Length: 153
Image 1 (cartoon, rainbow, N blue to C red):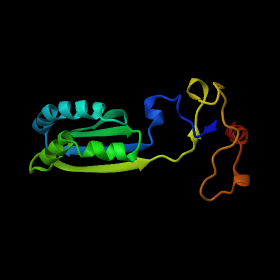
Image 2: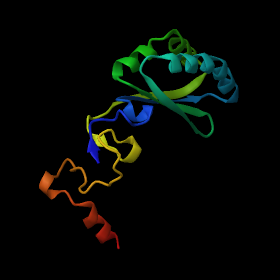
Image 3: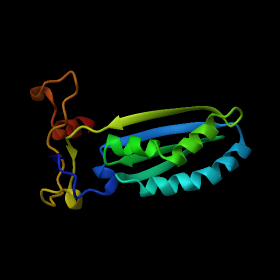
Image 4: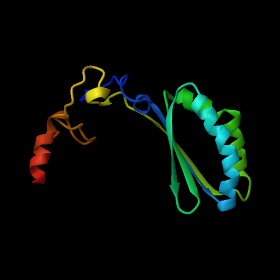
């Protein structure tokens, strides 16, 4: 059900800022070189005030990425200023270590959805009745969930 209170959600569900990034490394030896720099970086990340969680992803053959969640944008940006982050970024940018990379920042909208044990208002497990309007729709044009389920059959 629609809400603005995510206080009962897991830490990642309480985050309002997200980092998504990846680096395509220049080969397996560069990935090994990353490892000794990565461990202190993750230690700092987990100790950062406002840290809410992270996930690492891999794409063959040499791309590693991170999705990190923070309480707010300032917490994310403060982590980016840490000595561990600065050090790893300097190393990544040295010729021969990486072939490319990207970073994206995302901030959440105040409204979202929760149900059951992660719902702050009550613990009701209930689906929404109407979808969120698309940018091209007015609230009275939004289909109900029931209408969409019926069309599927």
